[in-house]
Image 1: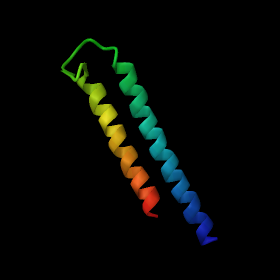
Image 2: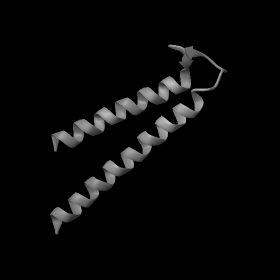
Image 3: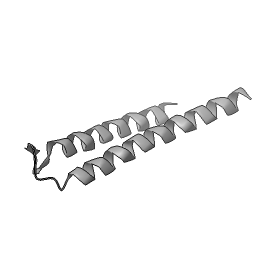
Image 4: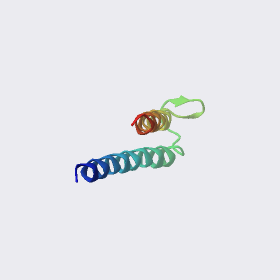
Length: 68
């Protein structure tokens, strides 16, 4: 029973992280069309920050998944 609880907890944590990452990617894509504000590599700075944060969280989640 302890294994089942741990497995469900791990699965829900990974699913929650995936939802956060997908929300960051979708938000960054919606803001990509914006022509206001500072730019970084020809894209709005907010989009670049959201894409970068999503990439970092994705890599950390992948590392934690592989490590266990």
